[in-house]
Length: 235
Image (tube, rainbow, N blue to C red):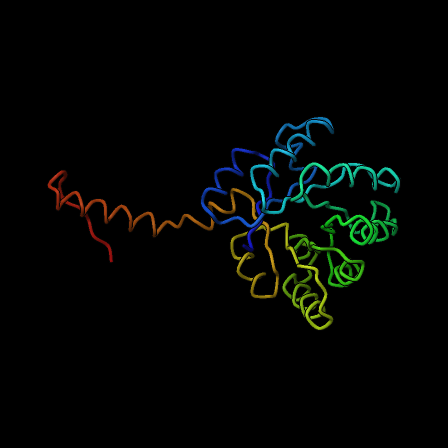
């Protein structure tokens, strides 16, 4: 299933999971903080609850530590041990451009059997490096790419061509989805997965003309059953 939900609310996850449209969930400290989660232990509990609710679908959880490789490795292993369907999100590099993160990605994937989602990428070049390092998922932030004046579709296409040509295992996740049109555009460009927020699913689902048409059907059904007066038809 190619749609992942950006969320940490158990209620929202349950709502859209019941629809059968989700292939997984991704979350991060920003989403968790917005949902009122405070403290690493609370975040771990929420991650475990999400993974249990979604099993066997994948859940991507971002580590909270930065810069200290040993601490990052320890926390990645700790988070991954919470459930067998948890993947670990690691940014492509640190806030000051520290390049050691791909070394950690490679170790987690090749030595510890932990699936990694390399995130916060803005270019195909970054995605190529993450894929070569062995990442299970490579996440480009399509909305932010477009905001910078670049073409997210072009970056997706270039990265997908590279992955296919060299038969690499990585799957492309496109996040930072701004509008419903992005979803179709990015799948057409070659994304394996697009992340969507709960509000964006509502935008995709609900159309004003669909609402009008449904109301017309209900009005006409009422006329047939004799429960109301006249309806105005629009074709």
